[in-house]
Image (cartoon, rainbow, N blue to C red; front, side, top):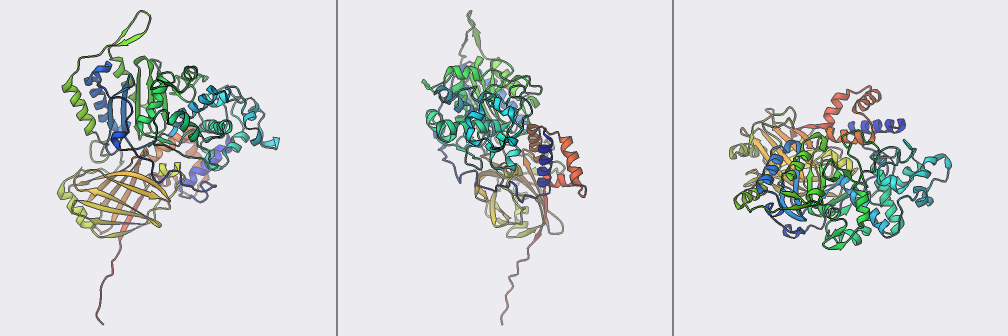
Length: 611
């Protein structure tokens, strides 16, 4: 990692840890997400025909076992949604409540494959060549002073951007430090000569997005709307933009899971969708083979054009941070879509192995010429109904209580949805307001704040109001208030929350201790991978204590960022200690990743006198 960028990285993380958001980013905050996307009715969000596993050569028993395994291990997988398709038909669809099939979800780097597809379309239309040089495409943007222009850049081509072999040092972190991303990319020094090594960098994809604008005269979204989104029936989408108004390309797209899988189906069928040619077979054939020099870590199987190459069966993956996947397995004519909220890569759990195992048990027969045909199985109505019942009963883990993997660290609690426990807690706080001690938290998860540069100065106050069958909890941050509803029966309540104009849909539920002393709130931001967890405890002195946690965890998200920019956690921690000698950095880090606050009851002075 470049020493200058390393120093800037440590300085940036130090500011985060100290809650010093002044000037981050220096180009200011703009709302990245529309107030609401165009949400389709749930029954109108489907496109692909529905079938049974047996008709497509799998047993309902095998699929049920697969879904059951994922559900039982969902503390590590953190899966929100799962759709299994075979032969371009949906054979199993699973949404863990409160997540819904018609609500678009942030894709993170899964967005890259859509940008790569746009480049393929430019090539198909004769508007771009793979070996065109970046300095020729952006001739008007090249720095005038040669002092800032790397001679190595003259050899960088579109191919190098597509295959993550450009060598540019301007990466995801740099995008927070400067608002002119094209300028910074062109001025950046290189780690190596283009094409020599593989170095995953989302700003390569951003430059591809900028190339679409250059060559088509349209934004990336408009270009794809005409050529991809409308032909594939994708109506509900949004794509975040850089400070200059260009789609980020490497991240920022939101789609429903079935809409994201349409791109997988398009690739599986070699560029044809619903009988219509959308993308050339030549591009897809080239895009889905390895073009990267040796990759030494868990992604060793290779990288194509803005997608990852799988281990076997001709598979390839469109991957996004925190567990967003579209997996294409040509041998089995299958596409699997998964949305999640975790910090694990495929290599860090057995998810991909379970997926392969599911299909390796299918009934496939090889013909002499090497072509595989599918044999249907006899329908098993009883087992298929059991699969449907399982799919309809799924919900995200409570993530609190006993028998869990230390998610809430040290605060264990016997939890339930007992009527008595709810009544005790709700009656204790009903119509009360509490002023919170100084804290570094927000109702919005910190990871979501960081991604959208939408930072909070902390929560100020919390108030409670009991209704017949629920408890309303209002959390105040500066001049904003967000209210959550916890149902007495432990069910989910949906609402819209906001911070500085960014609106998010959430699904909230609570559980509580039987003695009514502790309430745990699980608030899923259902358009994102993020979940806010809040623990509220009634203390003996009349105060309340609040602990704020989140999934994916802040420390896990930070590890992903450091991996992307090539800085080890050890080097970061050493740098933080050196630059903050007056601070107890372990304590600062703990308060940053799991913020706490004490609530002191506000005295309601309503006495009246007769004069």
